[in-house]
Image 1 (cartoon, rainbow, N blue to C red):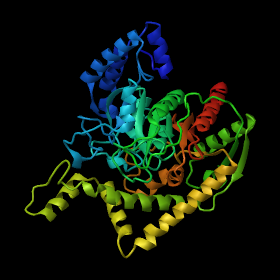
Image 2: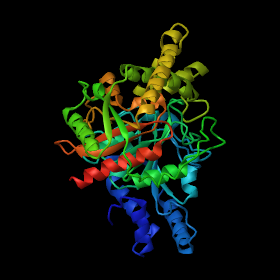
Image 3: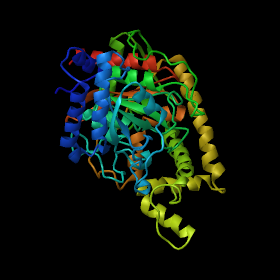
Image 4: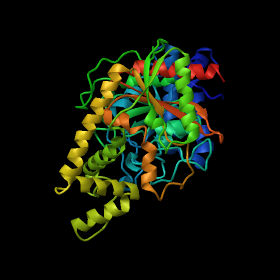
Length: 477
């Protein structure tokens, strides 16, 4: 069976009588059986129940009562609640835990007849840029299995890139959807903070966490966002902003676009990625868009602000995993020892590092010096970013400073690993939407992504400009 690039292709085959949803599901299950042993993208696969669901959806198609997403097979990152299914956040501390309910965003997909095929591997509690922090082993990049797929939604990107599902739902706290999408050569969309309900998403850093989409096509990303977005009584932070028809994104209009020259000329940026980014900038000019060089004065503080604040929020959010209420519990003689041993044995190195960092910056002696100051700088960065986006429609940049690096290459250097988030964290600090689209490969055949950011709730035009770049790239192959 061919690798379908969009749901519309699948629906066309079904309408022509050439395909059934049962056949499609079997195809993905066969791909998972064949590839997952090497790539380690899925942690749980729901084989028998998805085949049953496929039969039900085939009958709905016959009756003409199928939902918008009938025929779409979706994988979900192991941080989303799915009732009566395991939820471990790729962590040993949650061993044996099953969710009591389904996340709003996942339920909305199911209500439109999407099929959830399984939970996907990720960095533990979504903390990482390479998927090497998973309690269940690293996922491998399908382009080069000796390299990382990016993180934290690494398994989600691998599954889409290797045709184990059509779309994956991930979370994006500082680039966790966009970075693996760039490394694996697929599309990663981070909507505006509050556009999609976080109810049922295991919290890492609550004021940064965003539900994101990894797909093969903009068309699918737009349709899935359209279904998931909108008000939810279970999420007090959700926006009541009207949800536009994202799937009608193709306008082809001309835009004003900014690029941050200091960022693109940063010494940490790979030369091939830099060249590809400038190539995209030139192509935008050729297509008639106004493209200007700009700078943001607080750009250098974005990454430190992100890591101070997310560590602080993680310290608070992860305090609930103590051996009393969820998952494993160490056997010890007193309560304090049980807490210590459970968390020491159940949590991985990176998670413990961030919890300890967060606890430090929240401590009485350092609260004002670190946490309060970081919050003030975050507001300044957000205000400056928004002022720039009042003048320009988009900011273009690389998605990542490098292409996919080898497994183990950065494991002993946390600071070097954190720099992989250099270009993606700004969107989360400011709460704005961003997308990574594949635009080329380096001399080793490794994918390169370009990122576009826009003002809050402007996903429709973000999809439009992304489509123009992809179309221009395809026409000039």
